[in-house]
Image (cartoon, rainbow, N blue to C red; front, side, top):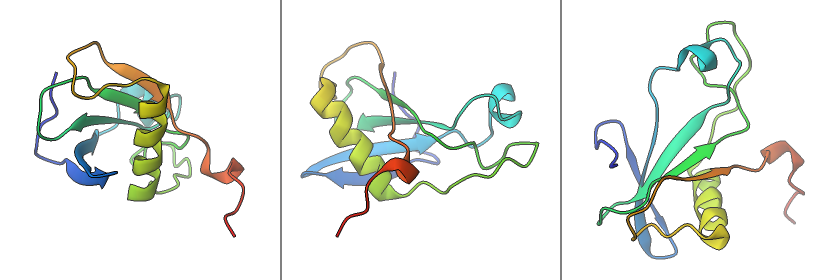
Length: 111
């Protein structure tokens, strides 16, 4: 499984280039605020395993007006590092690796 280039963004984490993408239109469950925002990540220069991340916020295009916190590239980089420490190997063909992003509101402030 590979990500489409259209609508995706590149990010460099620890010298490795990754491509990440959020679904443009929410799924039905995301539109109703029943499922959180999700994003997909893969290594940009090779076909390997895809990372599927469940984010703690709602999709920004939900139908019922649930508040949505914007996700930042720094959050994406943190999730990639977390998945790599959990055993995700982006250069190896494998089933999708699933993880969840930490809730940004629960992280301790950095000095």
